[in-house]
Amino acid sequence: MKSFNGSNPHLSIFFSVCRSASKERREESERTKWALVMSEFAPICIYLVISPLVSLIPLGVPFPFASNSSTYPEKLSAYECGSDPSGDARSRFDIRFYPVPILFIIPDPEVTFSFPWAVPPNKIDLFGSWSMMAFLLILTIGSLYEWKRGALDRE
Amino acid sequence: MILSVLSSPALASGLMVVRAKNPVHSVLFPILVFCDTSGLLILLGLEFSAMISPVVHIGAIAISFLFVVMMFNIQIAEILEEVLRYLPVSGIIGLIFLWEMFFILDNETIPLLPTHRNTTSLRYTVYAGKVRSWTNLETLGNLLYTYYSVWFLVSSLILLVAMIGAIVLTMHRTTKVKRQDVFRRNALDSRRNIMNRTISPFGHS
Image (tube, rainbow over all chains, first blue to last red):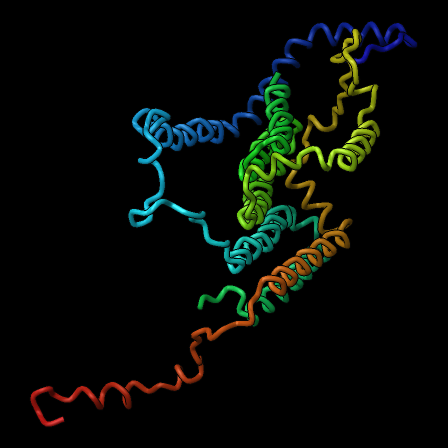
């Protein structure tokens, strides 16, 4: 805490007494408030422990049983009907897969911006609601363009 | 302590983005950075940004970077050859970035070198905030749609441009897509099409 340079000695003595007397109680209440706020994150922390455990255990269990550096390379190479493998097995990435994440990324901030908008409707009154409607209208124009162009159709 | 636990993997992952040999690894390391950034946002008390930033950063940005990297066709040996070729220009840009960081690091609150000052004594307490303080969500909701609504709408225009640009750049001349004609399908009359044909199979057709 910032210390006063005693301009008024009575006031500074009063404040120092108050501070020392109620310091523990105030620190205690601060701690409980911080604990209350942070205890909202307790389920998230539990998930943060359990879900990596659930995903990493099936990931890591095959490693002792899988092929390692002592396996001979002929066994590990690709099978091409008996002859020696030539070239890369990967085909060129089809560009038609690219709009799929893009057309998810665009409505993602739309939904993200809806979250703070939904909280204080009494304070935003009419102007805030209509600005959100304008935002949604502009993105709807984009969705309409995407729909009519058929960006997500399969062949 | 939590600050250093969270920020040192972030720094290390940021470095590994540049140093990783496999380009897919250098897209996976920013995911670690985003997780650490979310933890740092919790430490700052911005809980909404901390929860939304994995969704937006990892789920949208890192995924789109991953798609871009998947479209490469690089042999790994070729990457190792040309590492030092970009050192002059990238070094200058890196130094400019480092110089810009000094605008942010205010020596009063964030000392650059280890000092002997007791930095914890400079806590400035806003007592009004202890009575009832707004959550991050409320603050954003109050300001973003009213006072900063112009910038909010500018962001919607940016999203629109991105959407249309992605579609324009990646759409083929559409080959035959099987489509339904909605009006024709609604005009089908089951009495005429189905009921007339279901005469007894043993009788005359």
